[in-house]
Amino acid sequence: METAGRTVYVMSVVPDLSLKLRNKLPDVQVIDVKRRETADFISGEDLTEDDFQVLQDAEVLLIDNDLLPQAVERLPLLRWAQGTWAGVDNVINFFKNKLKPRIPISRVVSKSFGQLMAEHVIGWIICHERSWLTSRQNQLKSEWKYAEVIRYRSLQDLTVGVLGMGIIGREVPKYLKAFNSTVHAYTRTAPSVADTCTAPSVAGTCTAPSVADTCIAPSVADTCTAPSVADTCTAPSVADTCTAPSVADTCTAPSVESKSNYVDKYWRSDELPLFLQQCDYIVSILPSTSETRGMLGSDILKNAKKNAVLINVGRGDVISEADIVKALDSGWISAAILDVVEKEPLSSESLLWTHPKCILTPHTAAVVVFRPEDIADAFSRNYQDFLQGNSISGTIDFSRGY
Image 1 (cartoon, rainbow, N blue to C red):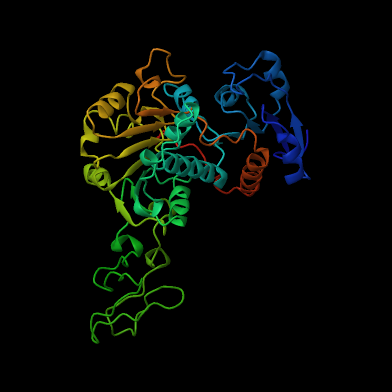
Image 2: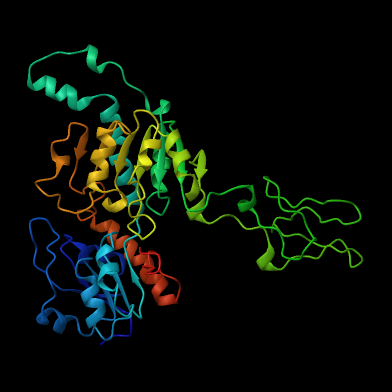
């Protein structure tokens, strides 16, 4: 066996993934382990004993997410495993009542996911606003009905609210802003002036930074010089009481998760009704966690803006099928555009199939199965971090559920 970590095992239905990975990591041995392909590319099959035999020496593994938890549990030499797509619900559920893995398990983190999500969201907003489906139905009836589809809003007229500002969710506002939409974001904690730059820890030595990210000198006698290029507060002299903060006390920018230049306004978790009142389109990109399940259920959508439209491209259990139907029939929302539902595949008995105000797509908003270069790129970046002992992007946090 080669030097630890210099061999990568790949088991995936993604076409040409091993080839793309070899191009990205020419000095690494890539061992391609074939798996059975199915029509939908996600078979839900179990790993066989023959599979485990082939994978028994694997220390680094890139594998389809449906097989990921089995591999992590059974392969004794494994030091790191990464899935080939973003969703990790099955991994979280597999280890729910078990000892959590001793190694990092990561999912694909790629801007392509965000762009694909944004394309799906913006495409359906335009389609809905311009009544393209109605025009299609009129076409099939050979009817030229101009008046009923002429009134529509531009994206620049709309306020779009995004729930879920994670790695994928942050990309959606960027593309909406390209069309001059107003974008609101719902997060656990909303960034504020106080979030943009933390005050030093020594009590009374410096006032909290202003919006301009500077430290303000309160008086001549108790001064604190303006931050230098390094953004630190320096004490003028020994006689002065203002003490220079440590490295940990310097002005720090908010985390990437909490702030985006493409968001016009943030709303906190206790402001969901107010957030809903502002949005022409409510776009959920939320993961499935104990905090998000049922978040848009019950009667919360009665707070939605008149004629608001719900778009869900995150996880289906943010709202039940029954609550979607209730919200539509009660007029709380005017339409539901769903790429995900509470239980997939959707039952043939579901009322959503034939509801006149519901549009369904089969969980296809951001499919990267046919983009092996994106998966290989994301893995190769993480691989370098793995070799250097750095944190791995997209590592599953079992305490948070994603």
